[in-house]
Image (tube, rainbow, N blue to C red; front, side, top):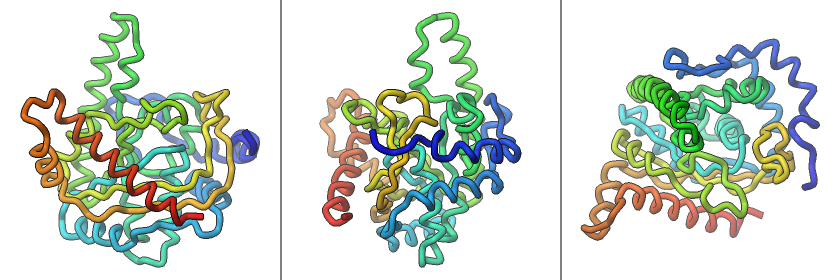
Amino acid sequence: MEGQSIREKYGFMFSQMSQVAHAAAEIDETNVFEEANPETRKFMDKLAGENLKEGSAVSGVENFEAFFDAIESGKSGLILMEHYSNLDLPALIYLLEHSKSEKCRALAPRIVAIAGMKLNEENPMVRAFAESFTRVVIYPTRSLNKITDEGEKAAQEVKARKINLAAMKAMDKCKRSGKPILVFPSGTRYRPGKPETKRGLREIDSYLRLFDKMILVTINGLSLHIDPENPDDMLADIIRPDKMIFTASPLFDCKTFRKEYMASLPEDEADPKQKVIDHVMSLFDAQHDEVEKTRL
């Protein structure tokens, strides 16, 4: 694949970032909430800014503004967003902060992302990138499902329960203080040729029950590509600058959205919760395809 890897293009940043990074290298129930590190954020802004081509922007600005107004009025806010690369969150925040809309700029620093433990624990530089943004760290169900040793799995299930209970409490505190929660409903980056990576997680249904208002954010354009030969090495991801458009859907009332779609399902539907998130993913696809018609 054409282009340089993050390691090749931005390796010069690593030593500088390591001097100001301080995020936990191991996650437990005591450190699931991490405030953004403004010092490492400077480097991420450089990375994002250099790889967003002219015309990159947030779209559906009126929907971002309506979402901000809802939060300002005391409603809890949920952002569900497509997930193609580790630049998704940095680019969204960067573009919101550079928007002409005052409300978009005000929304950006409030966003709290839900992040998997892997970003903290796998690699010091990936951890330094991740700590540039405020997040609540969880133990993903997918990680548990990969463990084959029964004894190890039982021990990790105990750890996961403690971490995820603490994460729920941290998320609730964010909700009550006017901070919207951003979640990637696929739980992983989409990978070409692997449709399972684009399937929404059943657990997302619980977020719809817990929040008041929601927007769906699609991403058109891709500046950071997973290296097919090294898909698990995040620093091997390939940089290819692109015009990226982050589009917000109209505002949804979470409970109404869920209730109405549930009511449309057959009474004997075996897994209505999965059907709800499947519907969300279909809305992503429709919005994404509509934006792509005019992006270039």
